[in-house]
Amino acid sequence: MQIIDLTEEHEALYFLCLEDWSDEMKESGNRKEAWYNQIKDKGLRVKLALDDKGEVGGMIQYLPIEYSFVHGQDLYVILCVWVHGYKQGRGDFRRQGMGKALIQAAEQDARDLGAKGIAAWGLGIPVWMKASWFKKFGFKKIDKMGVQVLLWKPFDANAVPPKWIKQEKKPVSNPGKVTVTSFCHGWCPAQNITHERAKRAVECFGEKVDFQDFDTSEETVFEEWGIVDGLFINSKSVRTGPPPSYEKIKKKIKRRVKKLKL
Image (cartoon, rainbow, N blue to C red; front, top):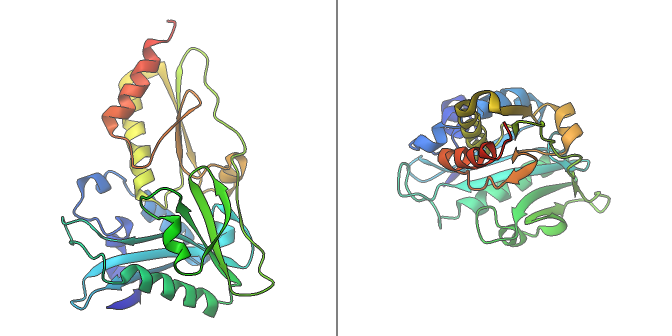
């Protein structure tokens, strides 16, 4: 196994989170590529795990905390660690130590770059990015927001603990219409899929529905709302993990449209 830095050769694969075989992943559009081009010169780091045959099976991406969705200083934040685990496409690369090798490489890189620690987000439920997995590598819980857990591993006694950036305000509904509000940052194709599906679904209802689109990769937009990615219908949050289907989003909007007093 080998850990390498992202090269131009593997960028297209990285933009699809190693799922170049997936039609669903291709629904995410080019938002991750746009985000990457915007942030790559601001400290974004991406590493890939290759097996003994040179096949890419895992990835990790992390960046300076000031460009993340977490408050802090002199830290790097892991956005995600992903080892391809499907039988389709590239195949199952789990249980080969790729996740461990990636997180150790990222930690060493952050140390070499002079960071005082490294942070990561995880989920308190047994799905992807489990908080308990990070604890195996010395990360400790420092903050919580719903099922999302913020963890960190300080390298320096003077390191300042990070904390979640909280939601500042909630979308409001437009009287007489259904209001669909999408917040999309770009770094995560899964969330980009939700955004693209919502945008398509809204088109079915014409003037009965207002679509509000917020690009939270813009720092001022994120600071105003405190929301990284999210979908709201008439101010009510829609669960976006995993991405709801196009039909499910359309059905939710349709129920609201039927309740309009026209």
